[in-house]
Image (cartoon, rainbow, N blue to C red; front, side, top):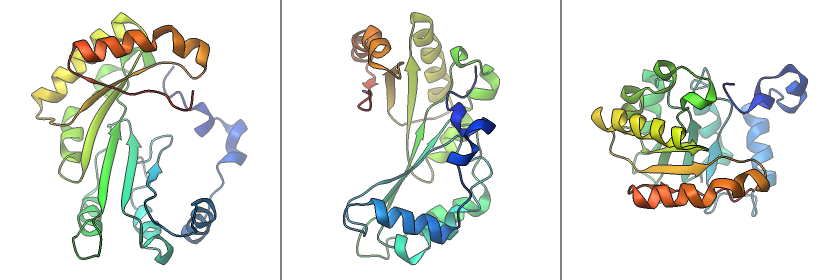
Length: 205
């Protein structure tokens, strides 16, 4: 139960998560992106939880000269971590319209429903997510496997809307392999359409 990315915290996989300097990370990114420079690529920072304890480290990476052409960044978060005052100031500065191009920050909030094993009061934090909207585009995403999951998602959506959340809401079918995914992707898509929500496919599956 809990976080499904157990490879991010289980000691058996520690060798897959080396500690690197900002310089080394920037160099590795340059090796991966198609033209060895930023054009229209989009940087996604995921986890684990990328806003847990790491907010102070991002300015050093994003201010690296090799990252200067980056236009768009997304933080894939569970929506439970407050932004520090320092990071808020940095996000405003990073998006200042003083460049030849616009920059955008997105928070992809995958809030955990009770089926994950997380307690509701720990996982559903509307006030925190609403604050994200002051610093970038925010959308919610709920992973759905059963009718109960959808009912829980509807309750959560109501709580976020009541707190003032204005962003889009996506439903995504559960399933890391095709056999599981195929069991409910059509059902989840139908639920999204019937309830005025958006549907997120799983292209990697």
